[in-house]
Image 1 (tube, each protein chain N blue to C red):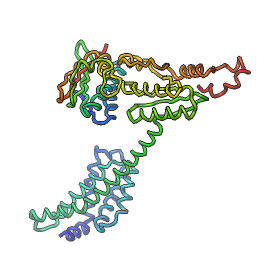
Image 2 (cartoon, rainbow over the protein chains, first blue to last red):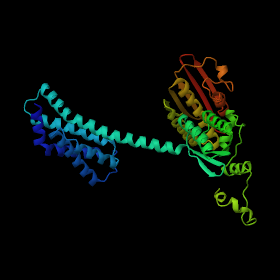
Image 3 (cartoon, one colour):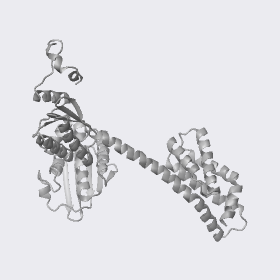
Length: 289
Length: 133
């Protein structure tokens, strides 16, 4: 039975392809693929239907399927293009085979459905797997990239280190912040560590708790932690929440924090023009600040 | 009252989603930057409580827009273990998770109205409102 249906489908592939293309084109209207140029859409559809038929003819080759799914992924087309395409193919093929047969009873219909399903299913599985696998890969790469960015430590000058924090702090990141802060403070022999939270959108009790713990840990290893970049609205919410940040110095901006850090390490910024001779040991790096 | 929008809290990152939606709604209603930060922080506390203690729940937002009043109502629902002593959790510094213990009393101070209902082993509902001034 299966071979017979396959023969019908392959022999009349032109007719099926024609109907499939019409159906797919009608789906394009007002749909996710609407912004894709007609030419590209046409050629990809042709390629898609070729992939489907090659796979039906010799159900071993997967190279063409892989190549095609890679192309769709690179084009950035949605996964639903693939699933819709295969659904439509299943429907059209079943319709076509039924219309070509003389005697049609329920057994026959169920046989046709079963055969066509058997052709399409491995394709769906493979294409969806390739597609989602590729997304998972991208996601894991981004996760790593994000983690690398999440708690950077910059030794701006001798004994002074800055950790600029941008974005939401969750438990995982809070752990990283603590580790990097302590490791970096020891490695760079920092006397002062500036934690900049200008880019942190919300400081709730959890974030505050982690900041307090990190500052306390920095104090334990003999350095001073200064919290800088507290925006006015953040200052108000911290007060409303009733969080005590009194155990370590805080400043509104990195500039002020840096000045305090210089004072703690017995240094200061001197204008070059007025006192050129004194400035030699405190050059360039400070101007950047 | 307009139909409410809800955010499900299941993962830690849902907290961020909830507070972003809340901040967006607050901005649309016309809250200033400070009040937006207050609302976002309150949502963050409520959502984190759901995530920490009840594991899952919902944060819902209602826009209140009547002749006299304009504001946002944030409701946190969960079917977690509930709170046995409400008086205790509203005290500053009381915590069972090793945190600061400023969450719920903090939310009460951040918002204008605060209503806590809890049944042990059934769940907790916290309804809190902030008015535009």
